[in-house]
Image (tube, rainbow, N blue to C red):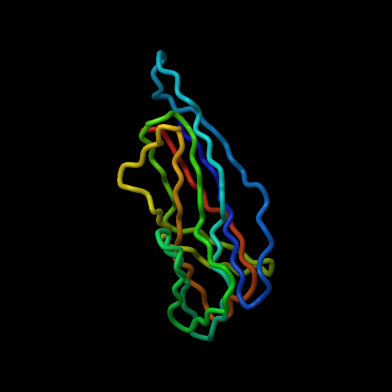
Length: 170
């Protein structure tokens, strides 16, 4: 069984804090490899918090902002100034068959767009998951994810996009 969810990422550069994201698209698909005599609980993904890099000012040389999934710490590099605001790791809760092993797949990068047609890229999307994640005895697994935003000197504005997260039984 495979479940895919598109998480919203909202970023604000030298402007007011971005509004809350709307409910996000979630679809469920069955995989062909499910044994006929085994009943699996469908996987369900809930977004608890969205990835938010906070507010920054970008100089002519550009730079990057990184949010660490384990600590939630925001780091800026290059010609970028931290203007405050809350940087948030994305938090996801997966529900399914108690004790089942799952695989969580994030893309290597995602492009985000502003209302003015500019794009920025979030790279190095990572989670705080163990190497072989399993749903707990209650059928629940919660994890956080972060990434690294690369921004050029002219890329001011509020950026939004979807980060696809795929979860499947092992």
